[in-house]
Structure formats: C-alpha cells, structure tokens
Image (cartoon, rainbow, N blue to C red; front, side, top):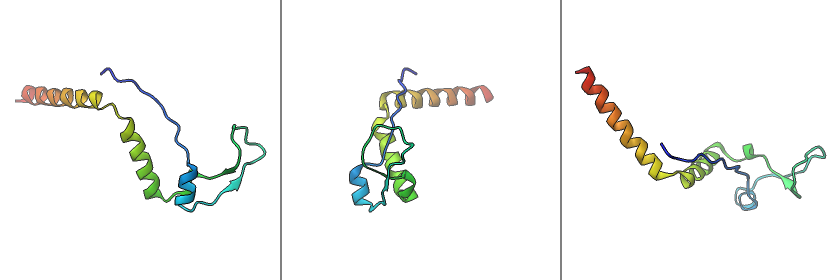
Length: 86
C-alpha cells in the first residue's frame, strides 16, 4: 500500500520518572548498554498509563495517508465481495 514501516524504541524518560514517582535502581554491572545513571523498569508504570503512552506514540507515527488508502481499499473489497454473494 506504499507505506514505510519504521521501528522506534520507547523508553521511560527522566520526566516520567519524576511525574509518575517511579522507583529507580542502580545499573547492573552486567548491563552493557551505553547510559549512565539509575534504571527504571517500564513495568513500574501503571498498566493504563503505559497503554496510554504506547497508544500516543503509535498515533504520533501513523502515516494517515497510507491508513486512508487502506480504508478505501478495504471498503471497496468488502463491497465487491458482498456484490459477488448476491
């Protein structure tokens, strides 16, 4: 349908740590990721809040042109199938 798939890694932000009063922990000595400071588990965020964060991130990245093309094609396909069944 002409869209481009992109992947984005989401992470708990310092602002979310403060705003949501999330507990932090020191980085494990076996953690090879390149960051300094304390760590926070995304699972520490309440499920409804985490769902809202993910939902917002998805909506910010939707290609609405591609979305609308799919909706139009889906409707046309549905109508064609209904007409064949008549």
